[in-house]
Length: 183
Ligand SMILES: [Fe+2]
Image (cartoon, rainbow, N blue to C red):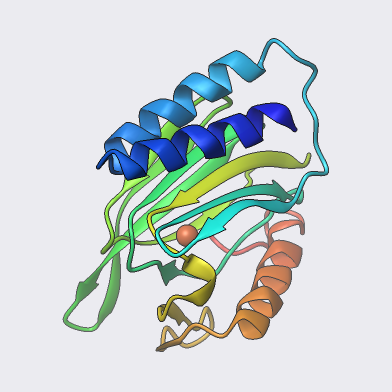
């Protein structure tokens, strides 16, 4: 979509000019507000731009889409184009991770996450959402970790296992409320 390509170009120029997460968040918020003028387009799940110092991804999150807890090791900007995205944040405690807070983003809203953030995300709704994830590096090639949702064990992020857990958690979250996990 043109607005995504335009945003990626502006992000590229911003990084080249010395900008960081705060400036990219403002660019994403502006782009999201402007793109509301055109009909919402979904089913878009693609890498918009990829370089060693910048990755722009448009993600179509399935109904109740859910991830395991993970980190990035680089800053991240999240923006919602269509629907909502919930973020739960964690910090390391003496006996494992401790949840610190949650943030719910609606359409047009953006947040910037520090490189050391540990989080998980979900789509709280029964309809597909469309979100932007922008990273201050090539996340796809980064060394980072994820937490086993069954045992809480931290381990190197393996994309195939990560996606398998996403499917499993999303399936669980889609079940009636009494059968679904707390988050
Ligand atoms: Fe993430």
